[in-house]
Length: 57
Image (tube, rainbow, N blue to C red):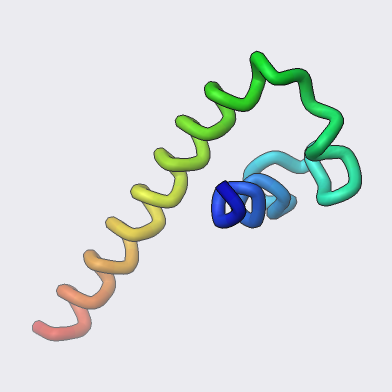
């Protein structure tokens, strides 16, 4: 969960959520936010893999 919080608090993805207010989010928001966070991390990992493949050509 801590790694998700670090991603969630990055202004590039969710600008309204900061390290100061992340803990005041309603509990019912956390599941949706965690799924979105996992999707963002997966997309970024895929982009990195694509760049490495292209660089290796």
